[in-house]
Image (cartoon, rainbow, N blue to C red; front, side, top):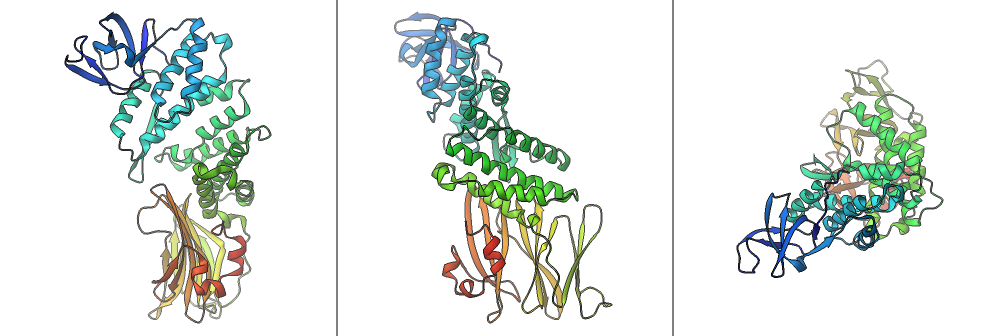
Length: 467
């Protein structure tokens, strides 16, 4: 963290404080200064301070009550730390807290520096980045706060993800916390959680780099000792490990490596989460873990023994492709009923014959947090493969599960979970097998009669959609 703080400084404590051309309220307003702005004091007159703002490269006069003067001597460090402790959990005052934190780091001797101020500044920087990523009506004000903290060495990274801006703190202070031997368990855990956020991975990174980063995330989280963590933090760590190991499962499947142990680890970490410990504020982290582990859960299952007239086989196609062929076991020498290739992961363990063996469903995972359901079925005299997606709009992630088949009404039962614009949605559907048109859907299977009678027993036992 680069600090350019010098003596005779003041920090703006009142947001949108007017910097004027003269020391009077009727003078021209040159600009409005944000909370947390660091100014150099150059004089005082009639209740105003004469200041210079290096960020906007402009001087002027500011009411004395709009700022707090600070000292950077070793004797000033305790007072600065006290203010930092007061502000570190105050939402909306992140830039102000980071400015006081920067002043404290300048004042405190290196021999007495602990992880506490580094942890506090990193937490405020992460909150500020999250605010900048949202659709906050104060977006212009937040952009100014980002400029303020950038002057103090707090760097942000931004990505475009699904058409929306994602801003992330670069995590330098979190890395410093992990390097300090005296850091408390909670501080180390918070630092590891901040450095392993899936939404802060560069979406433009290629598959090789992405897989390497996932391995690094897994190793970093495994360094966290759970014994001295609060119940909340412990569950957050387990949820994050589940997310990371689900990603590792997908990457290993793409490299044709064994995936069973990684998938089992992801499930075990998810089961170790206590959702009630996370509370409403952190529930989204649990739902995200459920969704991502669900997308890869078939990796933990062994392929079932084929039965019935339909046989599904997989073979390598073009580089990176898997080609699926569906054959009629009663006519072994006949050409395949249908053949389709994919760059996704075809989980053969999920293959299930339905409709008395006249159709078949298969789960295919084209992305780390996205799983579709392929339906092989005859239509108008020929066989086809229809793809059921978790959603048709623009979700961030999701999966769709085969949940059963109602033979009397020839309805396919499915469960879908998606994350759209930061919100999680779960629904259960009945679809006509012939054309896959949705007949009914509800937020709970209890509201759909066919689910009560015809849901698949294996699905009910293994699914995470009923969490």
